[in-house]
Length: 577
Image 1 (tube, rainbow, N blue to C red):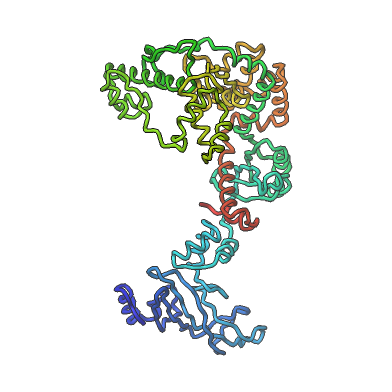
Image 2 (image 1 turned 120 degrees about the vertical axis):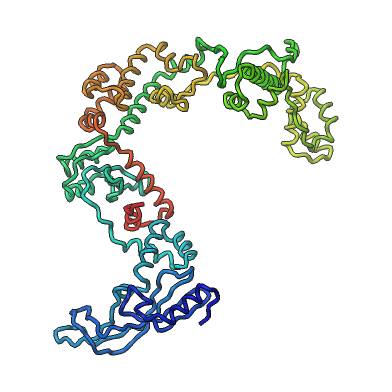
């Protein structure tokens, strides 16, 4: 024996003065006889002090010892080192005449189970690691925690763990998930009261769900999406349960109907997008924000029609105009008493820029950095002469340089030609009057998201200015019948958000009589599931927790690279976090 540090010296000294029952407090019938310390492990030799043992077959008491054999059991680590128990186990004769077993090995229920090589606490630790990380990652962590084991052992521990007891669920949520997208699916069941997974079932055809509901008759409320197989399974398996449709899916289906409506009027939408709005030039804002006040034109002289600006020069002057507007706004906010930090926050710039603009009476010009060297610098004279002679084709210049023995990359030649043509302002393929930008035409999908989003949702409704009318408002005013159709759809959006209360039957009648085919078809589909949709408008239950558990299931499945079998995946998903 050797002890390299003080704690181990104390442990050795304590071992020398302790009896077996003192050293192994949880196992009064075991006595430690020897203690050895290695670099990465602590080994304790243990033997039993019980005078007899019970036969596992008949339960009779046996006192005659047949033989002894060594048994190795690993326990939780001690001070970062593995703890190994070398147990000397005995074989007994079973003298009961009615017992069919002649010999048996004594058991140590306080220490471990039959045939196991780990103690109960270590087995539970391995289970916890396996549930959290799986096999490979769990084995790496177990090695660091001085409880090494193989990935397969961790997975066996997980699959062998008993299910946690669950009280009968009264309010459940169901949804489908893909074991292999587009081919194989499963069904997940969630306890909405306790926010935990009840079970995962194979398939989404409703057969397994119906069987499960018949075996659990206490279900009162079921939230689900609008998958017909789920609705039929709940009606047959739990006819007394109340079905609640998911509001998010209802809103999604309504958005898809509105998207089809907008797609049908795409020619009219394109025409509206090409027409300027009534407030094309918004008034300058006097409050802080991204709107900049109008300022005098920059001091750069305007070009004459005979010398058009190059695109590069146009972009440079546009940026200079923005800088001058920002400089003017900074000075105005300073005169109004705004602090440097407040000004920077309003304009979305750095405090360093605000300090500089407050100090300078005129807007400082942009100072470009030093031009990086190029492989075309030594051919500058040749390129300028080629451009003066009317050359514009980059490939032609590249061939000319190659014929003269110069090896220059094509990209370097292209960048040089573009830069030279842009600086001279001579007409060419990339020079001349800039064509006006094509108007941005919002897609039907984008407009549908803008329609269902709240008015203050800037992400879904990125309006350029508050004074500019929304594109949807322009559509309402320009397309015949669009305003009435959107009003009907908006009413259902408000009902789903519980902003207004209205019987679903009234809205369905209104949608079916609106004359809009998309809304009529959508209303007819709601008629088939009217009870569940009506419950969604009045009840507080939602399928949101189910969607969250589906995301968790996908994370666990993908962390095992999709190789987990049904038993392993079910065990990890059902385990509470």
